[in-house]
Length: 244
Image (tube, rainbow, N blue to C red; front, side, top):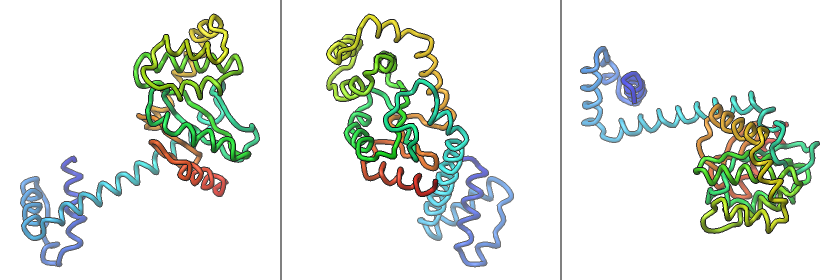
């Protein structure tokens, strides 16, 4: 925490103390340090409580800023060309998922995400390839986007996400063959400029939005990082639907 932040925290804490304590003034770092020590001696919990309150306020502010950036970049999130999509184009709510095929938490939520897509006929889900767990993740993302060109993205996506154990290039290609994909065409499409552009675009968008992990779920007015349950995702969708 910076010196200015410490001052803000201590002054916030002072409003909870008697007037005699509030008469103190922090003009130098030494005086602030002495004031903090005084507060610790008077009430060991008060500094901790003030710091926790300050961090809570900062987190709320960060989330508000993040939601604002999501709204500002919503077209790139929801309508960018090349992202795999499930659900009708005229859906009243779009849910966006940033994911990595080697992410255990992404694998854990696969069933809930697919069930939500099947159950909610007014929901559209956009899948953002965000390979952040090493070179095999990039291979899987490229293969997935290439599979979409053959009209087999959903089957391949489920097969990749359901795979257990190491997911290296050989295993990815084996799964592609088992899914019925044309492997020669798949490999050619994996190296296309269009596939590269989609992955680079998603990475840049994630950086802009402050998304550093997977999975991350977004609607126009909210973001939920981590392995969200079906109930949490359904609540997000309902909230977005209510907000219009």
